[in-house]
View 1 (cartoon, rainbow over the protein chains, first blue to last red):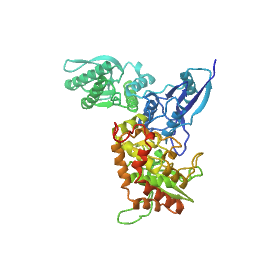
View 2: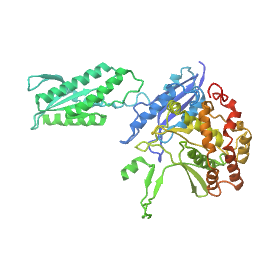
View 3: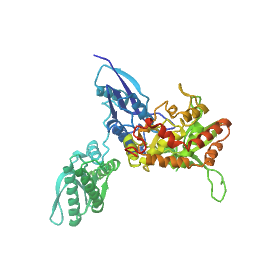
View 4: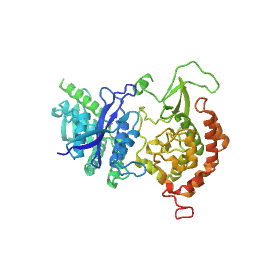
Length: 285
Length: 258
């Protein structure tokens, strides 16, 4: 097989500018008149860094994505297939996000994606690395229920109807009876932001309706909504996505008034699971 | 506060504990994070070029970060204080090519201003690398170390010789490509910027150069750069007009795009 030369660069994150100690978080490969990249999408720095600026990481991820995969901007960017483009990219990186100079690699493949995947696995992240925790609250909540085996706890009931004091009834995703004096029912409803717009809208409508019913019925219950955090869609997004985003944000505000708690971050979701576990343990005691 | 500093080192600005400095205005002592450049063998005029260019560009109304000179042991360093950071203290991306193009599409006067300024100060090192899109949506021009006295290259002699060379022939400026020459499209905007350049007071130019601390330029170099700029400020329209072939989208006056 023919040996093919490529150029590559490593994208690096420097958690602490005084210590340097960069971590490799992505690769860019150029050759065969193409350029491709791969970035560790759910990157978290090594060790304890609770103040990691995830928003800035996302900005840099979008920066690389637009520079490499967006439209070619003549006059403002060298041709993407030209090594000058790699030097240009390097000069745009600074501070905590750096790019190495263009480096050479020769491989027996003409598929640039194979080179990229090889470098990514070798230098950034191997596929057998630990599964990363979800960064959205609803998935993190489900994962944590599983991790703590609460999904198998019969006291935490799933997908069951609840009879309300006014004779009405409503379906809830998770519920349990908190029984140390209060006899209060805990109701937990998820709203997950999905690519399938219709499903997200149905979940949102359902939870809004259920919250109103609970409030009207006078049930002694605590309603908690676990709701994914969403970014505003791009201006170029289709109108249905933009409409859903507006509905979602309006619904979120409405739910803050109707529910007892809106959990809208992954750490908060973990905290909620810890509370559920504590409550269920006390029920057994 | 101490925790915050430890997490986010190095801070952009930190106030130092010190005795009261006094004064009715309440002066205090700060350390400020800045990008610094000193003269080197390869770039023997960086400090003077950065300082003179930034003062002139700012006087013209261009968005250029302020340059401060400071002496570290025996060498002068030009510090640029525009470092855009997030609340956590990290550097944010300084704009994609698409974002910067979009800024100049909606602000063609700024693009024309940048090019006319570069032609005035003899700066060939203009590429997207030297443009920073701030969080305020404004594109700032940085890095003017390759203007005026320039640096020695295989085809160029730095210093006074470089000023004389580009005074004689604008093409001497382009031993490396300026990315945006095709951005000059409108004579109306060119004229507006040439008028601004012409309106720069000669005493201001003399003041900028003469206020450089001693040791940064020789007397002869000071005199030559003052003469270069005070003469050139009147010549910009004719320099552009006689070098039209360098600006493919700027047509002859009275032509289709004027």
